[in-house]
Image (cartoon, rainbow, N blue to C red; front, top):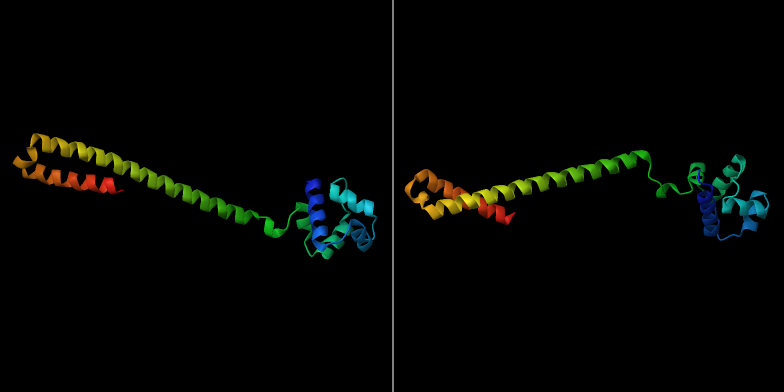
Amino acid sequence: MDQVKIGNFLKKLRKEKGITQEQLAEILNVSGRTVSRWETGNNMPDISILVDIADYYDISIPEIISGERKSEMMNEEERKIAKTMSDYATTEKEKIFKEMKLQSVMGVCALVLYWILHETGAYMYNDVLGKLAGYCETLVSVSVIM
């Protein structure tokens, strides 16, 4: 439990209401010095006063103890969902990157094979090598586009 954070939160709530420490002290039936000690983090309000503070500011006691509003807090389930989504996005990026690397390697291999077939002229003498040259040409084009 971070008393300074709680104190800053209590101070923020009081300022949002537009009241002084003395005015809050009067509302809660405590001294102004007590309110000051809460807001500096030197002391914590008693549990009975926490209930009154929570009612006055229209917040929950767990919000006071955590030092932030619920909307500022992310509960554990939301945290797990966010982590799962982040992990999924990372995994998908890794898959795409791996596929791109594979496409690049295949494109380079096809380019080398295509170059060899054309330099030797072998694709003109054998139908299978001619079809292979056509396949290599297509694969190189696809790799360049990606």
